[in-house]
Amino acid sequence: MKSVCVYCGSSDGAKPLYAEAARGFGRALVDAGLALVYGGGKVGLMGVIADEVMAAGGRAIGVIPELLVNKEVGHNGLTELHVVPDMHQRKKMMADLSDAFVAMPGGAGTLEELFEVYTWAQLGYHQKPVALLNIDGYYDPLIAMLEHTVQEGFMRRTYFDILQVDADPAGLIAKLRGYQPPPKDKWAGSRDVV
Image 1 (cartoon, rainbow, N blue to C red):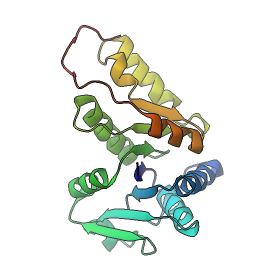
Image 2 (cartoon, one colour):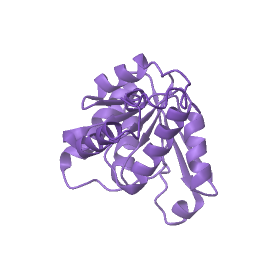
Image 3 (cartoon, helix red, strand yellow):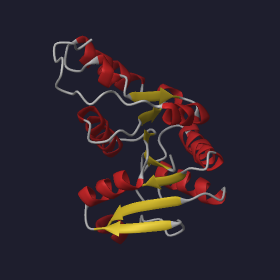
Image 4 (cartoon, rainbow, N blue to C red):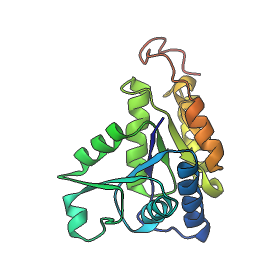
């Protein structure tokens, strides 16, 4: 594992601890020798983690659509900044450049990006780990909803277990490194949902 894609908010959120956790995760990535791949913004948690990675001597690779660069939210102080035509190409490039995916707190965009790579893992399109940095229980309601999908027979336990969760940056990185993907049998045993 050489790089980790981080999805997170373009806002700092309501609590200062979110930005502090983003700085902590940025330092943990650098300490682990991992490059940051992210959405290329300079605002919110995106800017916080990128600034921390760069300040700690790490590598930060941003991928941003032209529309957002034109609105002056592109981060010019990165190791690399790729400007792409649209969101689809942004997400593809971020996925191609990354060996793992982590969602920190964020809004609809963060959730959309997380669920895309999570679904790809379930379907066997990639074998990379997908994770939540669950800062201050931010993702507890989402984890409960996913547990509900298993209980109601819409997702197999095997696919629920793809999602790695930890509140500690170093602990999460250890889980990413130790991840073992499920067998590629999405449609086999469809009655075995729990």
